[in-house]
Length: 304
Image (cartoon, rainbow, N blue to C red):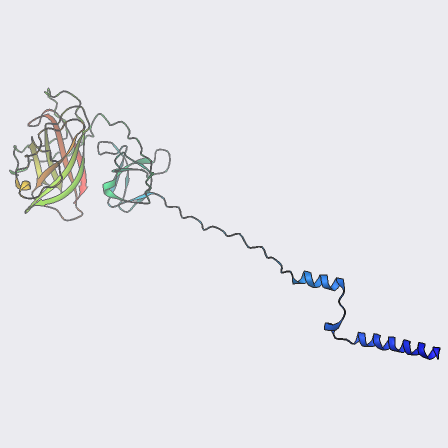
C-alpha cells in the first residue's frame, strides 16, 4: 500500500512538471533576471542633438563707384594735385571720409601710395557705416596748379563789369587786403532763370585774405559759352534763385568773402551743351575789386 502511494506521488510530480513546461510564455514564472532585463529595455535611448551652426554673416565692404571719368587727388579738394584716375564705372574700397562727408578717402591702386581722395559728387557710395573714420586732410598746397589753356573773351554783356580775357597766370600787384589768398571751387549745378542758363559753383575762402572780386569763364566742346567776366559782387547764399530775383544782373550778391566763409557763384552761359558733355569753369579770385590786388585762379572740370 505504501509503495502504491509513492508511485502515485511520483506520477503526480511528473505530470505537474510536464504541464509547467507546456504553459504559454505569458504564464511562465518570471525571474528577477528577466524582470531587470525588461526594465532596462523599456528605458528609451537618448540621442544627442547636433549643435546648430550659426549662419555665416555677410560682410558689406564700403565702396564707391564712379559715375564719370574721375580724378583721384592728394586731398579732399580741387586745390590738391592729382594722384590717379578712375574711369567711369570703376569701383574702389573706402577707407575714410573728410569732416563734412563730401569727399571719400579710397584705395584706388595697390601699395602704400595707392590711397587718395575722390569727390562724393561724382560717385555712388554703398555699404558706408555710420562709424566710418574721418581722415584728416593733408596740408593745403601753397601754390595753385598751373594750366596752359587760356580762355578767350566773350561778348556776353549781361554782367555788371567789362569782359576781360582770363589767364591762368596769377596777376601780382600790391594788395590793399594783405594776407594769403587761397581758395577752392566745387561745381554745383546747371540751372535756368526763365530762358537763360546758368552754371553755379561753390567757392571756399581757405586763405587769410578777403576775396573782393572774381573773374570766371565756362567752356564746353572747345567753345567758350561764357568767355570771361569780372564780378565785384558775385557771392550768393544759394546755388539757385527763384524769379524775379534770379533775373537781376549777376553781381547783386555779397561783395566780399572773408576767410573761412563760403558762397555760391552763379555764372550766366549763352547755351547748354548736350547732357554728358565735358566742360570746365575757370575762376580767378582777387583781393581787390575789378580784378586787382593779388589774383590767383583754378579750373573746375564737370559734366553737363
